[in-house]
Length: 243
Ligand code: SAM
Image 1 (spheres, protein in one colour):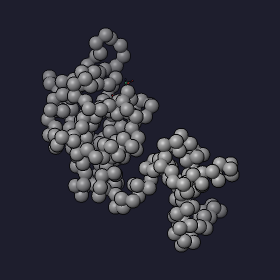
Image 2 (spheres, rainbow, N blue to C red):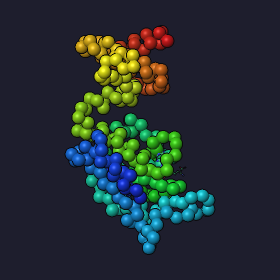
Image 3 (cartoon, protein in one colour):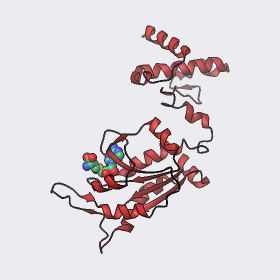
């Protein structure tokens, strides 16, 4: 997977890419990340990347020219390359979109600032518009990092253990079960005894039950689309009776 991020603040992205799961993936070369400073493609003495909006009104708009030229400078690594504009008006990002995007060879992510990007970029250069949620950020950099992180960890070889990404919240349409580590007692609360039993079948059943319980309590909407086995259905009926 290769990410190319077009931004006027490449350092914001660079510092995140130095650490953690994504940092290790970049270091090992499992994920490639290139940062393109849109300002390098601005013309004029002041290298302006924004201008006042036609029609008047508040704020500034990112000019089409520098973004277009920055985009032209990016090498396309194959037919499965995709250009994404980060915008609150885009398709809502979730785990299933992350999975879909992880099958691509290259994601070119455009980060807006100010009042957003000149509409003609959207109309001529963009394959998809993506929003990370129903709120407005000051810029697309955090949104691009959200996409890169969620997609990057699904790329084979990025996580040490592939099973852990398959088990996590949303992957099977459910929220993850609660996790515990040492010490055995913390502020009077004991680790559930089943987790200390060494009985793998009992542990599996407890985890599945807790995953279903959490989803039922917090995100019942997810259950409509979840892949549920007959065992899950039986657990759910019992949980509903209990409550
Ligand atoms: N005026 C725009 C609107 O209301 O749709 C918001 C512009 S916002 C202040 C500046 C930039 O932040 C956007 O161009 C976009 O790149 C990014 N951004 C803000 N919120 C976002 C979100 N929820 N998802 C993705 N990108 C977002």
